[in-house]
Length: 98
Image 1 (cartoon, rainbow, N blue to C red):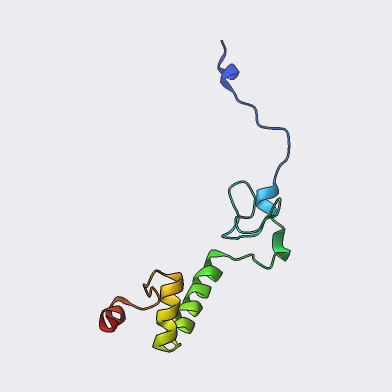
Image 2: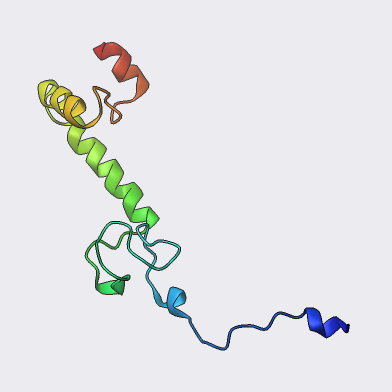
């Protein structure tokens, strides 16, 4: 048995699709969208496309927006969506509210 018989040939199909897709946190390992019911990623035109930096900024804006609401509205949001927790508050603020 020669040394070259251990060689595993590369696929001859030129599937460069993952390289052409946008940087998106919703893109799965199989080039499919994790949040939309579509057969594959729609690419740069997708209105749900979001990079990790954009997701972090969006979360920050969301926290500021919820924090600006009245305490009654914040408690309602916490009850409905976060099992009574207020993750948008820092630990000192949460202790003070309890």
